[in-house]
Image 1 (cartoon, each protein chain N blue to C red):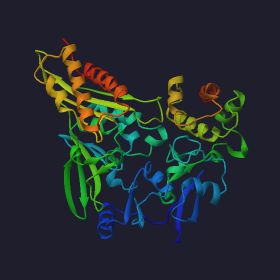
Image 2: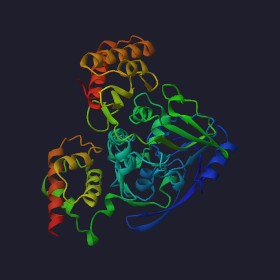
Image 3: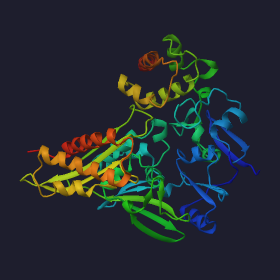
Length: 159
Length: 288
């Protein structure tokens, strides 16, 4: 099959890949670029495990066709940590509050939380719940996740 | 996943040309929240050779007020509609419905136009658009055609839009200032849930309390989304009372049974349809 060439910004770096047109953004990230932080859960846009930021908004990368990534700006969980491998305050808070159990939903949760905190630096509990409503945690550790996001918001405020 | 050629047209004219020149061979892709699942399950018709992306076309991405109408470009997402001040002010029921679709991730990709032409009986934005008397603007090659949204549905998940036609926008007249609107969604949970049933309504009453305008529509009640004229007519010209509202609810459930038949679920659905009708009417009408 013919391949298509795509150029987009991934975690602040420009990348160019040549892929089959029927691949999903999720496949490109995991299999072409070896960024396996983004997980595949349901594959039909319901669980949010594959959440990434596309032009600043959360999307399910399992529902983005390869060619739709052309020219876009994408942030994955690998792009969340600070320079030198220092964890982002959100990641720190997830660890401190015990918000990571099996960890499968965590990358998506962190990205949904990041999108929220960029828009709203002082979210209340309802706003946090709404922001992560497209991310399912089968360990059902939602309470700790909400607490971690609250704590991270507090940390970012004090900075 | 099936094989196909990926097309990313430079502009709307080129997209329409490609569609006309390759009639029946092109699948249009915007938000992808339904199409990607179809492709994942290898359910694209075998005639499809190309998938054409349109979500990047700026010409299809707008929400504007032309003085008389509010116009929504076909590639405008649910999130953009839900957040739009223009929509919240002029069609709050549509903003509310768009805000309940899927999850944040789905709303950031899925489009209101796509939701309409996918024609799911459970679509959240169709009942509000029917209540708004929305019109769909279509392009076939260089020709433009306008058709009332209510006339495109031919059955569950089916429309009469040609396979060489592209929806470019949906528009509706701005509501008179004294209009009240409401949208109610019934689902298993708050997020990432298909509507079990949804209701939309708009109404106006004169100083005497008489209903001078009323439109009611619902999803997952009839095979295709529709208005409920019989229920509307019960209240038009009258001063609303609890008993008239109840009668309107019975008219809606009567329409449901006539169109969908008496099914195993009807005993459960009938009382729900009736009480949701009353509830949506209570939100838009002052009862005397």
